[in-house]
Every structure is written in structure tokens, then in C-alpha cells.
Length: 427
Ligand SMILES: *Cc1c(COP(=O)(O)O)cnc(C)c1O
Picture 1 (tube, rainbow, N blue to C red):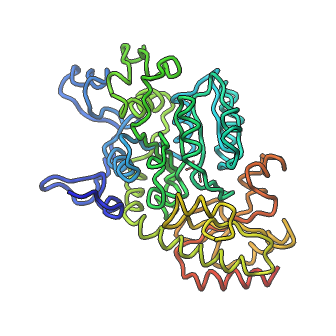
Picture 2: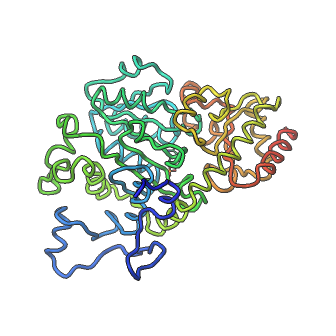
């Protein structure tokens, strides 16, 4: 069979029912699973057999949805988490612990910045933040002997910088560490980072994948391409015996393609327990079934809004990588040829006060701490999601104090533009 198109995987991937089984993905609303003998269950506890015993570790509904996202990204294994925050924490902490160092692009989501720069720092993991457009030399200079990973976002939330995935991947690989890419805003419909050299992909499925604002969730996907066993001293967690599982060595037992996700499930999910509820996984799967159709419309609406804003002299600047004038347009043409995302950021003349007045006057787009929803919404990050940052950190993250993040939903683009036009008039 020819390689299946992504549209078909969105609809049909993951769950493949057998004869007489439910057509729609069943919600396995059960915390636990029954076994005839203690020995049967013991094998599961020892990672000797595949199966379910407790939904904190694995659940069939979640696994089917993770399998669909894995197929969409072209990975070897995947797991769902309770949130995007949990996904990014697990993806990094699975290989970088106390005494280790990680390099991250400075243009990342505020919550991820906080997780890295504050909370994980307290846990003893050190981060160096580099500008997304830094030179190869600057990137090389950020590495230390204890560096374990490089991290970036395909399209940064809310700065909308496009990551040069090949540049970051080749730097990571020159230094023998994986590149982790948060692909939330692009989704695999618009970019598959593994095709450009990324090793691990994470998602906040809360955004476009769900797409209807109904469930917070996350996902981690492994490409299966990073060979941990080449660097046993750098990745002892994957390459040396795990005492909590009778000395299992993850790369030996589960191979290059299975080690990362098995370890994250067996250790991190077991101990931290940030599992997604099967009910939410079901809702996420409904969202995934139309992801390809929705992404196209989100991008079309955002492009129309960005073009309108770029021409309007009440607007001081617009960032949308689809615009030919955008500083990341060339990167977008390379990595996001079919469209980027539905989020546009811009400044209104008059700064912070004007931004607030503009947002108050919008009738369609509501003020929300959310993006990537079917309903348009907007936010002023400097006073909300990024308020813990000082002005220097804001500028490094690509978030100017007047930045408005507008997430274009699936409404009519004419109506969205009318609404924006009227609200700009009311400022
Ligand atoms: C929202 C978001 C997150 C955090 O995800 P939650 O599901 O809210 O925990 C991480 N990364 C990016 C790029 C996001 O947009």
C-alpha cells in the first residue's frame, strides 16, 4: 500500500476495531483490570508482558489516541499526559536530572519557561536560553559536558518565531544529545519535526488537537531515531539497570524505538501520575478526526486577518510568518509550506492601554487564556501568561509589552475582520 495521507490518519489512525467491535473508540472508564492469577499480573509489574493493570500507568483509550498521534508524527512510540506542561516536564526530566544541563530556545511558551527556569532549576537542572536566530557558533558555545538535550517550539507561543529545526537538530547531534520540539502550534498537519531531524516531539493537545476547548492534555512522541546506547554515560537512565524494575535496561529490552516512552511511562507516570483521563482522551480523538480540516481554515482566517492588520495604520506591527514581510517567512516557507497556525500577534498604536481598550471592544473574539480553539479569542500576555517575566526576559522571549495574541477561530473571516475593524475604531 502507498504511504497513507495525513488526512486519512487523522480520521482512521490509532484505533482499528476488529470484527463486531465498536466503530467509535470505546472509553475504558476503569481504574483497574482483572487477572485470573497473581503471576499474570506480576509479569506486567516486571515489564515482562504487555497489558493493563492500573490506569495511572496505561489505559486502552489513551493508548489508542497516543497511537494516532504517533502515526501522525511518524514516530515509534507515544504516550498521553494530563497536560502539555506534564508532557514537556516528562520529556526533559526523562533524560535530564539533578546536575544536568539543557539548552532551550528563548522563544517558548511562558509556562514552559517557568517550568525550566524556576521549577526545574530548583530540582537541579540548569538551563541556557539561546535566541531562536542565534548563529551555529553561538549554539555550539552553549553546550557543556553535562548537556542532555536541546529544546524549542516549532512556532513559539506567543512570539510566533519559527524554529530552524535543522539548525537546532544538527547542533544537538554534533554534541550527542536529542532535540525535543514542542509542535503544539503547527500540529503534525503543518509540520512533522522528525522529518527535519528532531528526536522527540511534545504537544499540548489542549490546543488545536482538541480544538474545541474541552480538555487539557498533552502528548510525547519518540521518533525512535536517537540511539541512546551510543552514549551510555550520558544517558544512564536509559542505558543502565533500573533498580525499581529488577534491573531492566530500557534500551536493551525495548530497543531504540521503545526505550524513551517505556521509561517515561514506567518511572515518571508511575511516580508523578500525570495521566490523562480516558474521557478526555476520547474527546481529544474527536478533535483529531477533524484536525486536518480545521487547521486549513484556522490558517486561512489568520492569513486574512494578518493581511488586514498589516495594511491598517492603527496597528503598529504584525507578526505572522505567512506574511511575506515577516522576519521568519523564509523559515515558514521551508518548514510550514501548507500554513502555520491560526494565531496572529500584533501591537495597537497607543501601547498597553490601547491594547486593553481594543480587546474590550471585540465582540467575536473573547478575552481568554487560551488559543487554538474553534472560537476566536485574544490575550495580552505581558499582563497575564508572561507576567512573571521582567521586561528583558519578555523581549528575549519575543513578547513586547504591547503584544496582543489573537487566535483566529473557525468563524467567517469577513466577520472576524469586521469585528477587528470596529474595535480598532473604538480605541
Ligand atoms: C499551552 C502550551 C503548553 C502547555 O500546555 P497545557 O496543556 O496548557 O499544560 C506548552 N507548550 C505550548 C507551545 C503551549 O501552547
